[in-house]
Length: 365
Image (cartoon, rainbow, N blue to C red; front, side):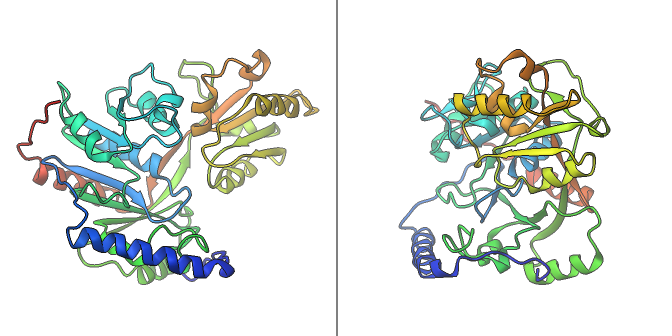
């Protein structure tokens, strides 16, 4: 993927070599059986990446839930990044993002019928799910490509179009958690966040650089922004993106890569002011005051505050947001769209589930 440059902190490369050696030894311990992995008699589909930062795991997980729950009882297990709870927690509609993490909260709110749980110990988490009275028939394992204590039945690896893995380096010089060669362990590779006008030459360059094996599927997806939704109103009210025309927008983000949403907004209005926080940022009282002050200082009556869907999960439970801010606070949902071969991808997933839906072991507590 030579069409994209990647920033590398070259002075940190010696630390990256040390990190790479540690990863190599750890993986060898699993290969040699010194560290043990566990398999389960149920389809376990891992959705992961080998880079730090947002590759679109949550919207791709949601795509799979939507696809699979038409026919199966779907479970979703993640570690619940930055949650305040410990151990295994089974999500309910009353769970908060503090208890289960923002991504799991978002998924449970959007898919009430999905069995959503969090546990840093994935083996224990799967056993707990399988011991439920009405257990899942399929488990989606979120962000677990490096978690080798569980051996998934199928692995989907995501790679950001905007940061090609083959031009990247291991942490801390680059953003790779594992060498790019680890991609060979995936059943499917998805290049995410592609531009809608991806050219044939881009397909060829990416396919050449990924150099997927015959057993691997290579797909290309983009993120589609839906209509604006109010954070504090439960009803299914949605505003078209066209309503942003001429509006002053205060964009507040706490995600890894805000560039896409900033670029999208610029298509509709040139009056965008940004407040950018770190990924999975836990908003504090002083931040709410700052956001309130910045919004009130915008010299226009035609204005709103826009946050990402993930940020909305951390704001909706706060009780220190004033009414005028609540009334003007919206989030922008995103969905995955395949640029091509969506039906082929769906068929592969269904085929795997059919072939791996065996008589499973019932785990009792």
